Length: 316
Ligand SMILES: Cc1ncc(COP(=O)(O)O)c(C=O)c1O
Image (tube, rainbow, N blue to C red):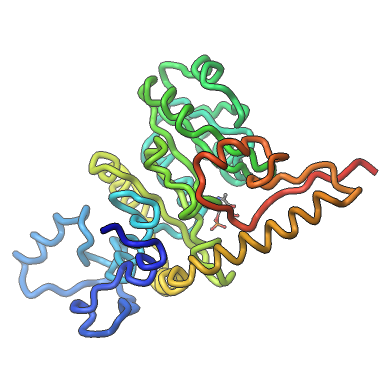
């Protein structure tokens, strides 16, 4: 029997026997790990791809509990927690791309992701080209070059809220041998990335997972051992680390995600419908309303809405 989402949230990441009877994982802080002997240290050191305590930067049981939970919510095989939502964008891009590569970015992408492309990626000889998030598959196909290794998506887009046809765009990317990355922050739980052709799903846990405006955290999920290998190694090479205190708070916040998402969806829709009736408003960009570009993909691919949406005002 598959667990209901709310049950998965209450049970996720818990290992009561490991934490000696406490219901929730303990908050662990630490850097150096002690081993009984050299042989154990050497053998443990080789297990970096597993949730094993080796040294602080590789994560501890608090990180691993949250990673199990995020992988479960996203429907992937593995998750890597990183220090911020922006790091969840930059780390997989840096870990996967190399000099000379080309990446396709939606024009509606989160601003700091664009800054990263213009700054770091460009400095390392990686070219970002922007595409209309509502592009059709044939037009997207024409943008692919031999060096295109990543189709980046963000659905709905930041500020303009275009909902992308992810399965159709992913098919084009895969046929061209590229990976599909998606910033799925808005769609946490409501959009199952790996069922729709995404290879790498990005979450700013700062937002819906944290839920209380008091943590900064990100996660990257994948759904294969092959993708886990380059992602995990890249994150470790870059010294990526997240505070266990923030991980513990995120885990605690996630227990109530289900009720919070429902309440935010209802409140957001009420305000969106009200705004749509106001004479000063030209258009409401809420994925659940027909006035939003890509509303048909929202209806097809999402199980619900988050609270965030945009509004276009009439000119003065
Ligand atoms: C879509 C999206 N991705 C990533 C981020 C970055 O998250 P953080 O603030 O944790 O760096 C944000 C933050 O607003 C966001 O809205």
